[in-house]
Image (tube, rainbow, N blue to C red):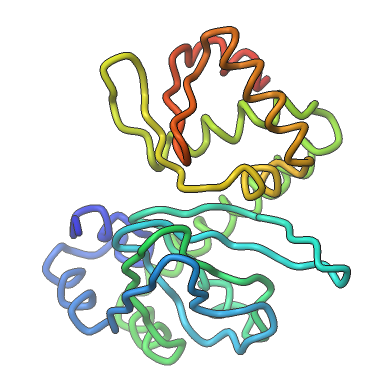
Length: 225
């Protein structure tokens, strides 16, 4: 685990490094195996989590059983912070995409922390505003963008979290199945697979199981607009 990545989370913003590391040492460490949920939709929302390693997906399930994948988060990102400003049942299920390491902070501990370091509240609100903006963009994409455009945008977004330089491009080990990727862009698995096959034939990317290598980021960025 890279402590520096964890300490980039908004929870640790506006405070010095010694204080940040002291708080991190007090947080409960959770090793979350792949496929395990740390909380489910409807559970009490009384904890905040920071990802130290691995990745976590946030999703909702419709009454008919269909699942909608809201986002995929990686090291240094937080989730569950909404409980600070609006305590209540969880609005999504958080599940490990692959083996993940989380750091947990209770609602009461978080309130105490903000009491000692008031500027942190501003950064938490900024994080919530950023997430709301991303949600609005995603809703707009569902209305105005076609599936290939949404797939290109999703892959580029995932590359900002999980991209690593490769010999011929940028390797994005997102860990998602094709069904999960389809849920992320709000389309059928068959349609998403067709878009990926088209991008592959054009030489824009190469598929490697639950990863892709982005070979022509400029073309993908144009397709995502």
